[in-house]
Image (tube, rainbow, N blue to C red; front, side, top):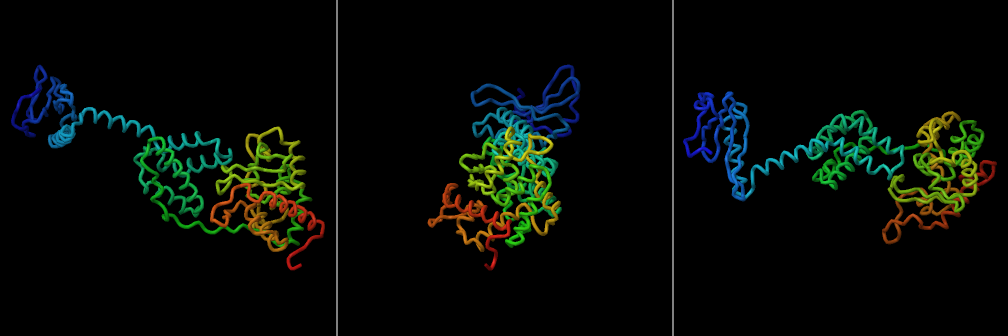
Length: 408
């Protein structure tokens, strides 16, 4: 260890020539320059650990680390020592933290989250979420340690999506990023969800208007056209079932046989598939049960009620029902798969006079009880079961040219 000495100067350091053996030039307060026989020069600092044992730090190689920079490192080390902290241990911990951060990039954490939560969502949703992240987020921030990402980093990636006009997708991808951050927080890899700072930063999602037939006479024509449709058997059943259950298109095409109890005439959709995240029960009218029994003979051996025609490992494409409607002559500005919900909502209320709260329950919309609490999934189930049967019977009636219409 060097003895007390006068501080070094840059001139003295430059003039320090290598010798046969290593020697040192002290700068005070434990720091010195070690001059090697091969001419290399290193900044070192001798100190005592809190337990009294001798140790030393290396601040780097001269001239890459200047005299001023070495003194700054010495000052930082002495500040730690004044707090009873071993600067050598603190440096090792910092190095370990950096290595850990480098391994836990946003992409690595996101893929771990996708794998860990895969069982909570449909395979099609898993594929869509993965593709969204791979195409839109990973190229921008995927390689960054998740603990170092700032709100602006995420927003910059989302702005690119927004500029394409995909406003709704930008919001959904922001929600995905938030889930990844919350997973990182729970795993001890990040301090907080950075997306919470982005509230209001994106353009508002334009209100979606799905084309729908809501006039009973036009609905009757559509039902007759569906009966005459000569497409793939799975698509035919999906088209016939859609007006009977009026669930969202994604809920219909991802239906699994494990969710359906034909004996109890119920379809129980898990919350992971629902827009509101709540489990949902769809009472099945006799007509719906008959359709599903026929389809079970074709697809009941697999997972999905409506499997892809290419592989049973996936459900049918999200375009199947809309493509079938286009093939029947119904343009996207006239009727969509989502439009069966508006058809049911309008006609059940305005023609059949069904209770609005029961209709809203069956549409899986948020409905509050008199105390302002959300009803559970079984609320008014017997009444909804009767309503669904009346609705199915009414559809049969107008298809055959009978039944009430608007204004009757």
